Image 1: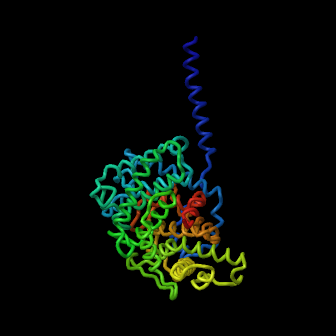
Image 2: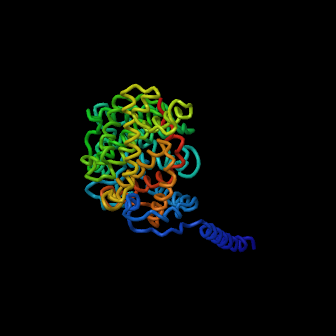
Image 3: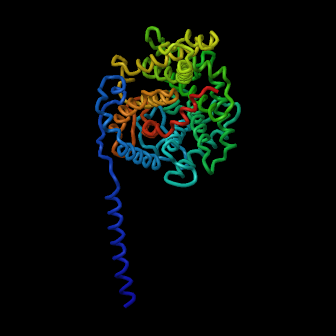
Length: 433
């Protein structure tokens, strides 16, 4: 009798388990937005209207998109803990498990996980973050002092399109981000050592003009991200050569002429978008200081309430001549360049989505937060809605030219959608020391 009851009990419990599982799956919220063809940068640059897309930028839509993007990334991780974008010669390969891991792509994923609130020791996706960090650290530690790079993996999609030193640039940003969070379970000394290696590679790779050597198809983006990496490292206490950083910022700012609105695109594949986003980023920190100091002087009655923010006014409140010119110019470049970046006549990047477009958007959006620019929220809502509308049904995003990698593009899109979670750190980067 007992045997018969046991035999009857097994299928009953199996049926109950199946029903419960089905109920849980059915109750899991699903994204309702349908993927839409087109280019988010056609919206940014005025080729397609962004009006109305902000209605898609709801908290629920964003949360569901981030959830699905993170789930896709967790499944895309390689056995060694890294993530890969694939090679330039095989851009058509979209399977994340059919490519080699590379530090640049892994760093982008790591930053996306961090910004999404992932911890090292517990919680969803903690193992993915832990393994990605370990991959980055082991890669850096295994490289010799005589190598100009932090990895032996060469000819990746990201290196070819952005530059040969992009791995050190993005790894430095990732390590700075993780140091800022001071997560439980992190070997801080080890992370600091590896960050110092990345900084050394970035500084050694900066030429006399402030440009990163070994530029790729859109090398201006590598140089712009190098500027961001050095400022991020500086914000967490790393030692950065100020002269190198000044050269880097000057190179980016000089790509834009605030007098006539022209943009140098020689290092940006002829694409205005790539260069202009770097000009906005490089001038953001100095523009913020100029604006804050003028505002304070007005409040104290030192200058007229309608005084303009320029070199002359900055001298009036105590800046020495050279500094006044530097900060006054940075303010003009920032304010003018961010407007140019959204004009109708500025084309939509290469014409469709590539990782370069996503990265340019990220650079511009973060610049506005570094600057404490009050205009960032409306712009973010409009373009964030558009990003939500082009997410693939499986939770990923991918490029349609150059950087096609769904891993790289998904990580960058998640960084865009969760940028609000990093406001404190980005604004701290913008503080003058």
